[in-house]
Amino acid sequence: MALLVSSWSNGVQSVPKDYVMPPERRPGDFVSACNEIPVIDLQENPKIDRSDIVQQILKACQEFGLFQVINHGVSEKMMEDMRVLYHEFFNMPVDDKLRGYFEPWSTTGCSLYTSGVNYAKEDVHYWKDTLRHPCHPLEEHTPSWPEKPARYREEVGRYAVEVRKMGFKILDLIGEGLGLNEGYFNGVNQYQTMAINHYPLCPDPGLAMGIDGHTDPNLITFLQQDQYGLQMCKDGKWMGIDPIPNAFVVNIGYQLEIISNGKLKSAEHRVVTSSTTARTSIVTFFGPNAGLPIVVEPAKELVTSTSPKMFKSYQYNNFIADYLAYIRKPFPPSGTPLDPYRV
Image 1 (cartoon, rainbow, N blue to C red):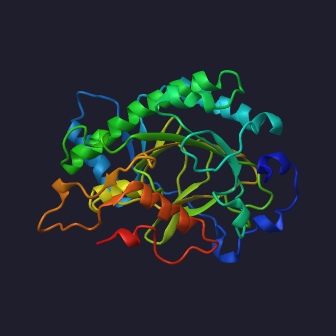
Image 2 (image 1 turned 90 degrees about the horizontal axis):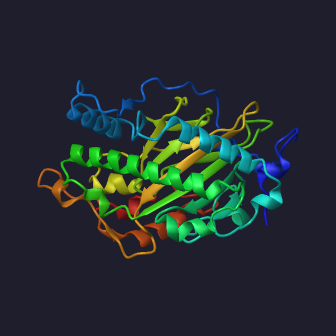
């Protein structure tokens, strides 16, 4: 069993050699924050036409594949409660945290692991610990969640419900912008899971990475962050995403790019470490259930003579298997996991 980074890294003076990234995978020079990333206000306002919000979101999805939302319906108190809860969780004694240590991509239970999805075969490790568990339907999954802190299941359960409401509100706005029928994504998104990533203080952020550049394989991702560390790649350049108090970062995944027939773009992103501030991000993933034979393909409404089909139809469980095989390779090949699915 690989020990959690947070169990041994406090006070270390140098990065262990198996956490030192090769030069081409290091974060590089200082990356300035990007002020162009859209911040979209979802608060209902009679002075703002709904179509304006729809177009803001659609433009952000097309240009960046990523945006931030405020006034989204998840209360400030609930978001603060999550910050406090996970600070407490990752500062518990390691024996209290390690109640389960399973396959990181398990769809049935809770897992707590370090680095990436293939620790034993990694050429170098990431400077992070991750707690991951499914959260819909709640009654099926809460029994596998952590028992400590004692309020965990109650508070995280309420949070998962509110994030789900926000998520479908945003998906409906995206669907409206694409010209899809109302509720289109209800049939695509059967799965919701959370991943809480903890990045402890790192003695030399120039040598280590929280996680390499990647694009999410799911439908759409909602990120609560309170400390800087998230960066995205646009036009071949990395740019920083400064946290906005009580905002969510919304990140387009591969499945939404495919369903939109390439009209929306998934965002490549990564996380850098810090020598001054530990960072904990609370991530919620929406997507198809890989345990079911669900077919994903470009929406038929978006395939026309002038916009031909860009991606093949496929079963989502096959896509996830290919995606995991791709990212588990010690040295991923050129291209992207999407390439075999292009027409």
